[in-house]
Image (cartoon, rainbow, N blue to C red; front, side, top):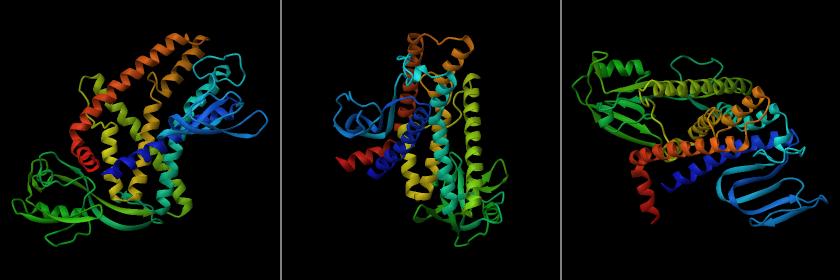
Length: 387
């Protein structure tokens, strides 16, 4: 269980570090000084920098560095991603040419957007790498005939609440190896077999990660279909790999398809909230994501890579939402500045960002409390194991 927390910290660190690297690289590209670029969050353990004479120097601890004309590269004590401190990012030092506040609106907008872009790039690199090595994929709608497919299986993609499958503890991602010792070529054959066995106990052989086990489940008549079933949706899946030139193309298509799908999902979520319909989606906060990360990691490294790519895209979309305290909110203020011909007062913008941050933290707290009630057993087991 402790491995779950370690893997979650590593995944989160990669996502946040990539995001901050995007800001850092674009700031440097436009001649804006990055005063510090750190791995992990302060307090600083140590850092290195070039002094005015061009010599590399080492600094221990969090003391101020006065003779660094360039960037201090630091290692910090809290191993959660990284950060970049950009000169003039709070609107001060407007008269200095290497200050963020001195740059044109479009350059500041690009610097602020670069973290989001880097998260999308990271996701595409992970997905392309996955397609080179072999990535789990649904085969229901067919795939490119030039692809190599292995490890085909019938996998559960949905479990209906209060169904026989739910009562038996089946989960999304479980593979059905056989029923009553019979193997099936596709899920159509499996559904036809189960559909004719309503009221009869069936012996399911299930594979979950590396583990295999048997469950006795009795199908019932499903109202929507009028046939026997245990309350699951199935998909034919396999590990799909491509030649390098196709892997790049397929990876880019998949990345931008996921970006669009997540944008649509957030649109539907917000539309439901504004219409007073409540939250229809199953939201997860840090605790929930940590628990899911552990579950995915147990399925194998390639699944973890796929999940990390999905998290990276989620981070990009959320961060570019035009809400105060997020990168998208800061870009929105730049658009307002461009339209009105002058920036919003620093005090006013700062207050709005602080309010936005407080609201975001309140939302995170609410979702975390919900996650604790849902996944609390996992983290209690971790606590008991440690102490």
